[in-house]
Length: 452
Image (cartoon, rainbow, N blue to C red):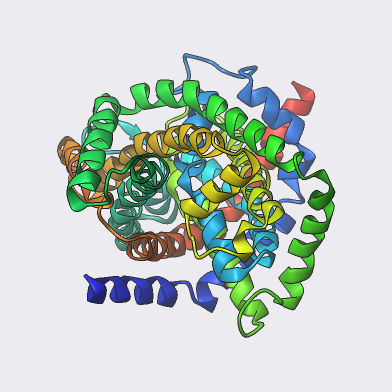
């Protein structure tokens, strides 16, 4: 297992090299400038769309704008907001959070383009059902000769949305906060029992398909975001004099690398972008699969909904986690990593009750992500092997959940990092090539909104 872990870690490090960094950050910056700051200039319009002003049940698609946003957020607002932030701080220092912010801001433009394309170039699967996502806007937008690139994305996607990471971290926090303090040992059997319990809960939802996932996500996502933010706000205002100095530390450390061994600013940038991509998935290609199912005939409208995700996910939720860890100071005097570090911050600020509050939050975080991911995986599986067989992926996804409970954080997170990197290349390449078509559609859409 040690050899496998080393290989996975090396795989993750190799795929997240300078080429991918340039593609995600540079591509996102291009989208932001090329769109003339559309995500920021029309933010109010995005809110009105999410609130249902433009919903039409007669339009093609399977779920509402709000349900599409909630399903996508269920796949992004998850353990990445708790664990990835902790990993970013322990490996790249507080300055990594600044580069997560930068990645999220340009990621808003990236999501606008990729999710507009998901509706603009919806295709049909082998059973004739309307589908959206990078594999479809690659084949429908660029042509059938590009299908190998779409298959490459789908193959990587089936790995990237597997349940191992979410299960691993949910099991870890339950074990460290509840079981071990009560004298229940950390054994293979204990972890497998926890993993099996998670498998049963997730299976009862995901086997119901996208409509059940959308309904559950639409109910839980707003609750989980509010609950978590309120909890962290309490922690921050328990240390009010530390908030501004710690924000300054994040910005200063981003350019000085004082907290990183060896003082490498490049390491901080890579860490921040890598963890932001894992958190909000801008440019990775998962969100377009959810937004491609939205009931709408307006591609740009769905792109406007999608661009809110990095703001909610990274700028708000991840920043909350980072400040909780940095303000309490636990990152400087503990060997803990991942979600355990966040649990220590909660315990220090809210003695006795804090870790249990965190468990309540991350349980919803991880479960809603586990609900959303198999939908993405079945679309990828169905694209390669045929839609009639896509339930095979759902069953396989559910059955491997217990494996995540016994894996190591290093191996699991490196597997996801590598798979996400492989997904990003075809997604960003196709979006950059097709970006002029999105801008033509955006110009037409906003002209009609003004005159309508």
